[in-house]
Amino acid sequence: MRAVNECLPPEQALAAVLDRLLCAAPSPCGQRVVLTAPDAGDQHHPEHDVLSLMPASGPLERFRAGRSGPVVAVDAGAVTLGETSKGLLVAIRGAIVRQQDGRCNLTRARSGVLHLPHEPRAQMDVLHAIGTALGQPGFFVTLEGDRPTALKRGSATRASHYTDRVRTYIERVLQQAAVTMIQDGVVLLDGALTMRSHDTPDVWWRALARAASAQGNSIVAISKRSNLLVDGRAVRFALDDAPATVGFRDLTAAMRAASKNDPRAERSLGNVFAARLSALGHSFRMDMVPARGLSHADVLNQFWTSCQLRQGYPELLVRAHAMTAYSRVEIIGLQASVCARWNLVVRPEPSMNGIFAPFGGRYK
Image 1 (cartoon, rainbow, N blue to C red):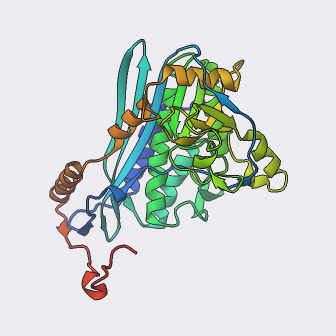
Image 2: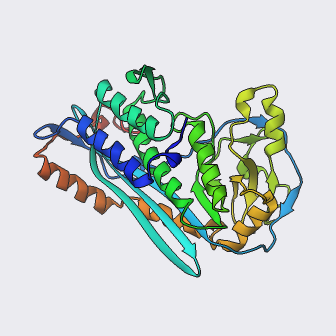
C-alpha cells in the first residue's frame, strides 16, 4: 500500500482533505455558540509516547563536535475557539523552520477557522480521506469494499480526538514536505516516533524515513514530556548518575529486551535515547532514524553541532512552536471574526462556581 509521499504532492493531498472536511461540515450560520476561554490549556501540542518499564541500558556517551549541516524543524498546534450544537470551532497552524547556510527560513500553514462536526457520518468521511492520504484508507474507519461504514474505536471517541486527528494530519503533511527541503541534514520533529499509534499508520512513518534517507537526511524527534520509564524512573532522571554531563544514553537494547515479554514495549521507529544537550539543561527522550550509511553517533553529533540551543532545547523547535501557538489576543480576534461571519449567537459558558463555592467548579 502506498503512503502519501509516493502518491500526491503534499500540497495537493492537504487540499483534498481540507476540501472534504469543508464539504462534510454543516454550516454553523445562526447557531448558538459557547466560546472557549482563551487560556493556554485550550491549545493542543500533544506528544505521543509509550509507557514501558525497562532496566537502565548502555553507557553514557558524550556529545562531540561533528559535521555541521542544515537543520529543519516542524511543529503544529490547534486551538478550540468554541462549540456549537453541531460541532467544534477550531483553528490549526503548522510551521517549518529551516536553518541553512547561516540563514533561517519560515514556512507556515494556517487552516483558518474550521467547523468540525460531531455527526459520525461526516467524521467518517473526513477520517477516511485522511487515512487514504496517509497510505492506509482503513486506518480510522471500517471499510466494506472502498466505502467507510463505521469509525474504529479510539479514532474519534471524543471531540478533542477528532480535532487532534486533523491537526496531526496537517503536521504530517508538513513533515513530509520538510524532509525534501534540505540534503545531508537533520529533520527535527516535536514528540516521539511512536509506532502503532492512534493517529498515524506505520506505513506512513516508514515512507517518511525512506524519503528522508533518500535525501541523505536523518530524523531526530525530541519529547519535552515522556511517559517512558527506565528502571522504574522517568526519562528525565535517566542521566542523574552523571549530573551536568552533556551526553546521551542508548535505551534501544533495553526496549528490545522488554519487547520479548511484551511485544507492545518496542514501539519506536528508530533508536531511543535519553539525552542532555547542555550542562544546565533537562534530560529528554530522543528518537532517531539515521540516514543510510550513518551511525547513531554520527547523527547525534551532527545534530548537536548544527543546532543552537535555548536552555538545553533546540532553538529551531522553540521557533517552530512559537509560530504555531495562539496568543490570547489572536484567539479573541478569531472568535469575534467567526461570530460576525456566521452570525453566531453567543451563549455564556456555564459556571459551576456558585454550586461548588468556595472551592470552585472548573478544575479539580
